[in-house]
Image (cartoon, rainbow, N blue to C red; front, side, top):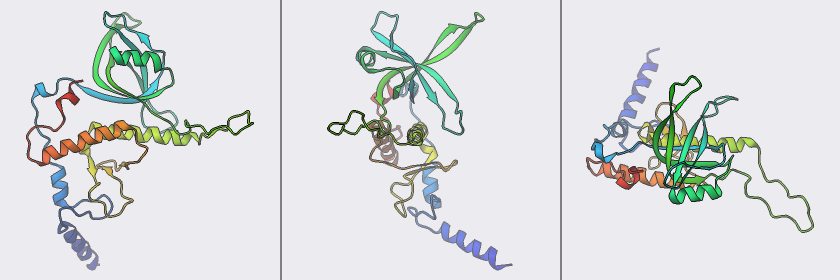
Length: 259
């Protein structure tokens, strides 16, 4: 009976004695490493962060229309679904506003049912509801827009003499899995300090690159990740390098925050 507590104590002491860069088991970091990850976030000047940045992945639900304003602009609505916890995941719709060159591009190429990633700053507007009361809605002033390619969109060339094109679309579950993974990247970039960064501390290749500290959700980098994932990850790495060098200013560049 007494040997079990003693063996547990020995394992605990060995874990505490691990070097700072070591990992004890899958996703369990050494104490110095955990302490370094839980440092107080840096403080920035209010003028440095001028607007609320946001990003969404969703489906275009209506044709692009022109804004009623003096400046050339267009708008549409995006349906954003939550993670697939059941057969009927929650969703919401938000207005997207595009101006100038991005408005022209959106008017020419964006259409209903397109799956897109947008980044911009968050705003709001008011409308009267059916009872005549003011109701607040939210919108995104889009600064970056990317189409998301689903599995099966690359079609096989037709064989000579064939009249029907073969379908290369895999089961719909793969598309759903891809959407969930991209949504998880969105959650990561919203609060990267809530995740363990295991890229430099993998004891074996099967470990995830990032793991959530509370929910244990996991992310792996893949070659088919869309460009925006790589861009945002470069900004994250730049921010972490700035913090580790002792700078008191957050590492995000001003041009990336002034949306």
